[in-house]
Length: 226
Ligand SMILES: Nc1ncnc2c1ncn2[C@@H]1O[C@H](COP(=O)(O)OP(=O)(O)OP(=O)(O)O)[C@@H](O)[C@H]1O
Ligand SMILES: [Mg+2]
Image 1 (spheres, rainbow, N blue to C red):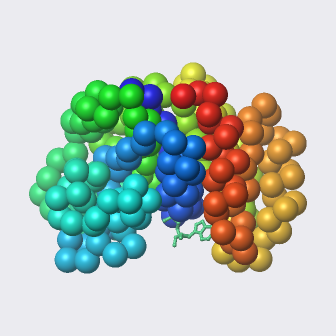
Image 2 (image 1 turned 90 degrees about the vertical axis):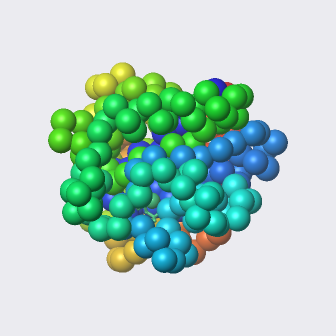
């Protein structure tokens, strides 16, 4: 019952893009996999197209139905806000202990399969009034893939997120640098991160290339963990 958390140096940075490619790559290696997006905001219940649950389900080769979406993303909110704020908009309360428990239950249910858990937002985005995604990853205690970007400012955001994960004792198995849209120089950003990030594998996901070979590289680097 290994758990792999997908963390973000920020929101909208490429977590789902990398996670979906990684799920396909792990499947190509013959590994049993499952995925969970325990808390998802900005979900349109009338049209799941392009949503995180839909992308993860498609990567798992599963149909996108109300049932499968409810299974892979049990706590969904309509507003595109941080989960606790999105929950409040609907008169609901999001509790860290509920999210932690549902992740742990799913971990047991999947048996020997690798459970990929996509967190919401950035490493310290709020989960409830008193907890952040970092607390959830610490409770799950498995290795983490940190997804970062290449926009101006991304180097500092990535290094800060990395320091934060390490300070909490989490094993950062790899940093996936997902190329941001815009003009920032991707290769130089990746090179700077490689010099500054310390002893962690970096895998680049370029926009002008399909993600398969990067995801295969990432899966190979994770293979020793599972
Ligand atoms: N390397 C890349 N190449 C091409 N498109 C990318 C890449 N990285 C991210 N994207 C695109 O950028 C958008 C945001 O990425 P994604 O949805 O994966 O971010 P996220 O971190 O999962 O966001 P959220 O915080 O909402 O969960 C998506 O449309 C995605 O397809
Ligand atoms: Mg996402």
